[in-house]
Image (spheres, rainbow, N blue to C red):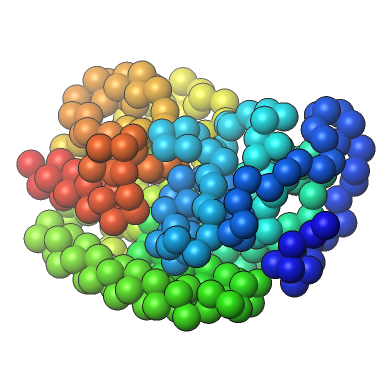
Length: 315
């Protein structure tokens, strides 16, 4: 018997059921909790969702800390974990290419909330940024969370979805969201203040892949170049591409380039050696850090990244 909570939900889109057989996942799986089950696709979203849900919902995250969502390989066990889901929060924009198949394999219906809907999106791969939301999701940069203003908007959307689906706990979700948004507004002001200590001519980023565009747009940095494109599963750059990037690094005079917590640093270390610059400590890009690390939560992730960037480029 579906729970009353589930009666309020409508799965967005039509999903085929054949994947249930392919994955071998039972259609009916007993619920382990009486609370609404809320699933976030990856660790950064999981942290934002948990801040709003609090104890009123059972929050689960598919792709955990330190794992690259772009290259994540879903398993039947992940489909089972989704079987109880009432709400699924996702980034969209092809950031979770495995999600539709996983939802099909879960054998259950859930409302999918795409948190980039309505956000001002930038175009991927260093093409001209868009000032308004794009309908061409494949051409838009999904890494919206690196701008704290976007995290605030996503928190509002998380609140609204939880309130609509579970009105009995609306007061809890609204109070939690108010507190979370106040913290995020303080964080955004701190980032602006911390970045202001770095001279403008030093605000140039070279990173492993194109994940910090929203950060650069919001906080006044220039993306000088990346070794890869928007997604980490792309092939490594050609020798000519590397030579061009090394030349650009040398010409710009940046003191350091940046590796990321979800990637092997070998390529960036090679580029840094060739260019004669330092490798800064890893930035948290597409995942939070492990428990106990500075990037365990979204606030700490952003503060750690900003401190690392300002310190490395201020040398």
